[in-house]
Length: 173
Figure 1 (cartoon, helix red, strand yellow):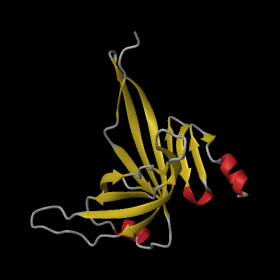
Figure 2 (figure 1 turned 30 degrees about the vertical axis):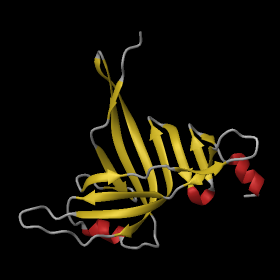
Figure 3 (figure 1 turned 90 degrees about the vertical axis):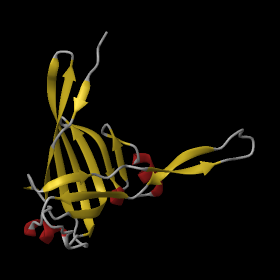
Figure 4 (figure 1 turned 135 degrees about the vertical axis):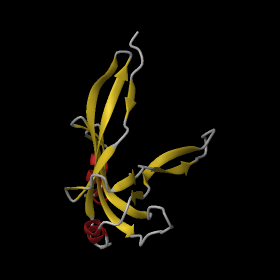
């Protein structure tokens, strides 16, 4: 019997345009890849089904632990995307304790749509949360591509296999 393996991620570091932001963000919410589905029903079918028809918008946010001038200068222009990288370590546990430690890296190309001026309360840290939309996401575990979605280039890869290659060929692009 193989036993149980438990993977844990308990911390991460974030980069914007290649610059480490160690200690500046309290929380990072990366986009979810939401598949849009369209209902299909037809004569002769005993039921209705949902079929994939594309992807919903990619959105996320970053909760900052304070105001950082260099960050605000990068995020302030909604017409210029920034490259976000979130790096974490996946600790794999078994009955023998912690075994492997694997690098998990997420790449996001984002434009920020909300640049907060802050929420201030006496004796509390000021709160700043930036919301963004993304056009590109990629997830890599231990050097192996897991998922990649490039909305502007019509690319969607799972495990390194391009799921939209035939689609692009069929539409001539």
